[in-house]
Amino acid sequence: MRADSHPTRVPCFPPGEQPTSVHESSPEYPAAQRRPRVAQATRQVKLTREGFERLQKSLDQEMGRLAEATRILQEQMETSSDTEDTGLEDAKREKMNIEARIEELEDTLARATVIEDHENEGRVELGAIVVLGNETTKKDMKVQVVSAPEAAVTGGSLPRVSEDSPVGKELMGRKKGEAFVVNLDNGRQMKYKVKSIEY
Image 1 (cartoon, rainbow, N blue to C red):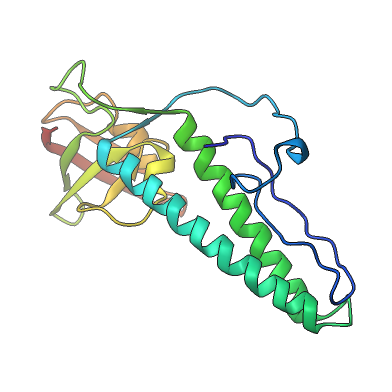
Image 2: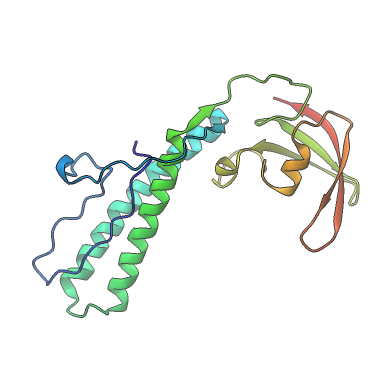
């Protein structure tokens, strides 16, 4: 996987002269034409095993979407004689957005470390499944605390809370029975209590 690929802008060619468009991450892309690697931050991303598999599945899906977007773009380029054509511009934009998402996923997976064990199972760490009691609404909710990239991917058996979110920041390191207050963007406050922690 390439963690440092960049979205490829597709130029406009006259009908019948379009080159075949292949994403740089594809083995079909000529090695001599690949852009030099650009150094990026090497900060590790901690993922649960389930989260790693979800991100990998998401990457596979985006690769499929890229192939389809490339096909659509080629069709638009072959049928459009106007470089300002809205459909052509939309197809270019969609392809670039997918390539940007692929770059993001590849970078995350390249820096990923799967969480195998926990230093202190009595406290909330990444991967912890926590039952939170909402002291305001008197309702409980069961969530899993994960890193931001993992929280952003859909799917999974439990609602996920990012460690970077207001609730996640307050949760990290807490023990069963501890209560805390979260300040919301609208100025309100929510009080929670850690009712259980499991891994």
